[in-house]
Image 1 (tube, rainbow, N blue to C red):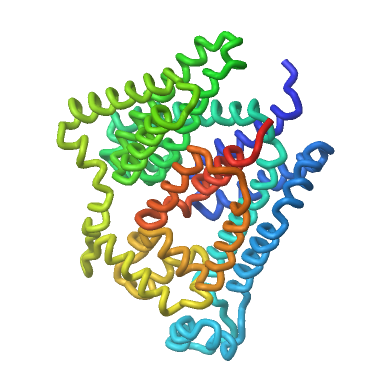
Image 2 (image 1 turned 90 degrees about the horizontal axis):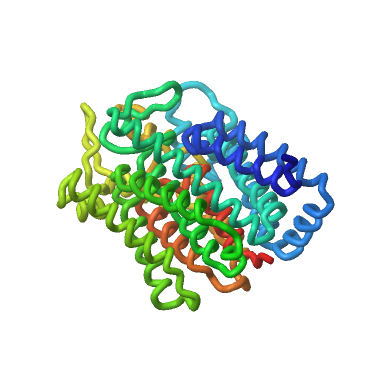
Length: 442
């Protein structure tokens, strides 16, 4: 069977998403390099097509300001890693200058970033995201393309859940490159962190519900979609089990928001009532209660939604005890010290080790609050630039869809209480969902 042009490029995009998913959400310097190369090649292939070029030109013309401002943001991140003479560094980053001044030996130049190599790879990641925005606008431009993406992500979420549940029921042993032993009592799948895994499955759940919604349209009803409906419902059940058994409080809380939002929308806002959505949501709730209530105990049904209790869990070491709230507080205090130009993307671990060297790197990977960490990394200037870029993209657009409202809820909660927005896979899914559910499709 010969694939159409659109399918070829879309399947290449799907392949890149699979690579992101398998290798811990692309959350490593090596993965960032590999994904950058793959995305660049896909972009160059897309540019060979005249129609795709027209889509790109049209998108560029409509979003010149946001693209320009985002490009300024990239150059600002590059400025953070450029070695500066110590006299100039003292002006731009007095706190970094104090750290270097305490070191033995004469250092003539240093960057604003505390970890320039990590910052460089983060810059590659942010460039990759911009190129992916171009690609998505080039290759997904009809409802059929959108449905194809939703079906793919639904299937990918199903497979990931099956693997995660299988690992979980066998005690989460490490398998080849997959390190599951970090959470012995929770499903994580290909991803090391259970909350990141749960958030990924939430995107898959939304895609699955959208597939069912679209199968109920007049055009789709003309086709025989009986088996497809069964498959998607099966996918949803396993995706739901994956989210539940992740036992991520934030993940389960966002799961509850998603289900309530869809139910509320079906009963009060949707003109064409969709019985399939209502029935599957009721089934999801039954599976939720049965699995959690009978298998893990009734108290777990409510307990897993208390995501704020995570903020006060102790993190132990031989020298010092910290809880997550204290780590967030530490990150907030550091914002004041690096207020204007920040301490560089991907530098929080170095910042933490500098202040708590006796802990080592185990507890220094992130601030447990994306908002605190991002402001600290970019500084006031970088944060304002990227905020204006994103804001200019969303101003004067079509009304927000149900999906984008749900995604905004995800972003707000994660920004304050988690670090999942730092994971490249979650970033890619966010921009993909925003674009294909915001732009006007034919």
